[in-house]
Length: 402
Image (cartoon, rainbow, N blue to C red; front, top):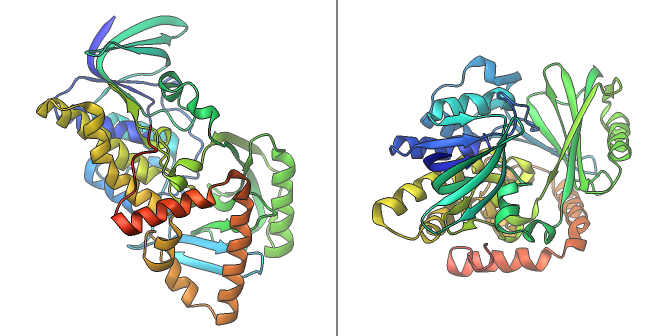
């Protein structure tokens, strides 16, 4: 049995950020990763300016091998059924296009933590003054003893399931899949991430260039037909945008949950077990989760350090410190903030006002029709309730957090 200060489950960007804070504070930290590193990670790789700044400040300049081609992204282009398109540049200029297989491994290495790959988390038991963690390495059981455990293991987090067995059954899940196509002709600007507000295409539809191929991605309720949804999008791109692609050569997909950030229903753990990153529910609008994963991971690591230094309850400290990241992330989904502030890292209000009055009406109508697609999840009242709390009290309530 190995005894350490902190065990982190998942070799993710949020894990690397947490580990950096812990190691810098002198805490012995071990990261458990079920796959062999460097491991594949399903992700577009389009990083926000805020995430880029974090990597530079905490891990240094990015080496060339952690980037896809094109190596950078200028911003986001929104497309609407009315055929209005809105390109929006990121504040501060282009950002890196990360190859997650190598960027995550690079960040984990730079964190200074000890990494045990090919080691799968099995379960845990919190004894109050320590946590026992059960795992398997190459099929053989191994055990760890730690003061704290951090779950940084993605949206389908086994750590969350161990702490809250019923939580993931209580929230709606989506399947997010992308297929890779060799390009015949593609008028879409490769310097932008393209997103469609089109209810007939799916709950989340995107496309962008990567390593000489075009990604066509679609998100929808889990259980629907991926092949059919994808074919519909490919046909639409050909008909409406002149995108001509060869049949896909590769595909990938995963389960995702968009709900917690929209309705302020995060899960942060209990006792000596903390949850961070996408496992906690952090996801920026348009599906970029890397920047909030990095920042929430760093806050999680800092909370462990501060709680130990000041002999304060771990969860109390973490929830107090994480409120700033909740505010920043949930603001991106807050309709009042979108309408009257600048919660995103590209200027949607300015892009909207640059359109003709007629096109602005079309865009607002199309966005409303798209939002109605989510009506069945009954998020509308919860989103507006959270928006009013933010407006009246300056922050979001933590009563729904777990």
